[in-house]
Image (cartoon, rainbow, N blue to C red; front, side):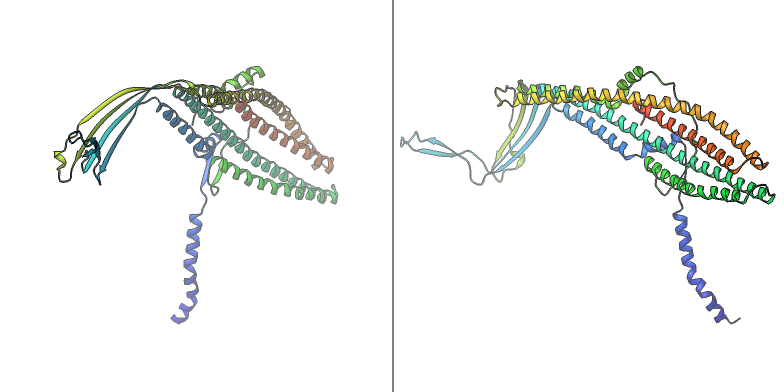
Length: 460
């Protein structure tokens, strides 16, 4: 073959080869990572990567720095100063001319060309009631931030668990639809066989075909539901949306701890719930605000000390030849407010009103907690009973379907009976699946309503 003609034939392939290689490399780079996670794995990952928890953690650290800032009010304050002065014209002092008796004054230069003063100052507060109240208030604020951190952790954990259950039930619903389609496909094959034997009518084959086709929209919605649930789960745990999540757990009934009575649950919620504990601490912090406002009318006692070294010298004098005489002093300072234009009494009244408002919110919160606990406990018990009922219904529905299908294949049952039996079986399975999902979600909500989601010591 002519080499020139051969080159012309393979030239397009050579030109397109880099594009194919680039595309292959792009596909390899963008291939999604596969992440297999269980429920507890998802919670652990979410607690480490969730941004709400990170913000709450930073708020907790800031509250700790507020405590240090409050303590600075009672620690000694030390400062130093250095001042250099260049005299453009000398400083003079006037003295009467007592020698000439003229009654005039004479001037004497008392400054030199250069002057410098170095000082060290110490101030120590001995008594300041507002500082003490500020320290106690800042300590309470730090505890409040701890409860806020626990609340955020509880919210995030419950959100992750529910998102995981949402993804599980979406997959289970898809599986139920696929099972229903498989049963109808088998029924259609049986109907065709009976039709060829002259036992079934043509309308029966059409009904079986329509039953399969009518399930396909449900199949599409279920597949879309899985995608949406997976996206929400990735968002909840902070995983990149390009990752592929594989859920290792399944939606099965897990018996939770035996529910306690309403009174015991309410008492536990008041003791452990971070929102209740935080608002209770807020009431105490408002009390310290009252003390701080009242302290503005109390005396302030502080001690001070000062150490000075100074020098003066004219131009041309070596710095090593200058003298630096040192002086020092200590003392006490007492400040007592006498009248502040009713400002102090107004601040005290405002602080008291703020505490009354917080107490009112605290009482309202306790009423809401009582109602929340009762509702969550009732929901948990109701879903548990539904599981018991539906588990028995599934067994009956499966047995009914097997008998009906056998009757239909023997030619003594009708297509209507088979359709009704299939509907009852599918409904029973869906109801049981929904009951299990509702029970698991109710367990999460009940644990959260009692403050059990995150222990008092914290886990994260």
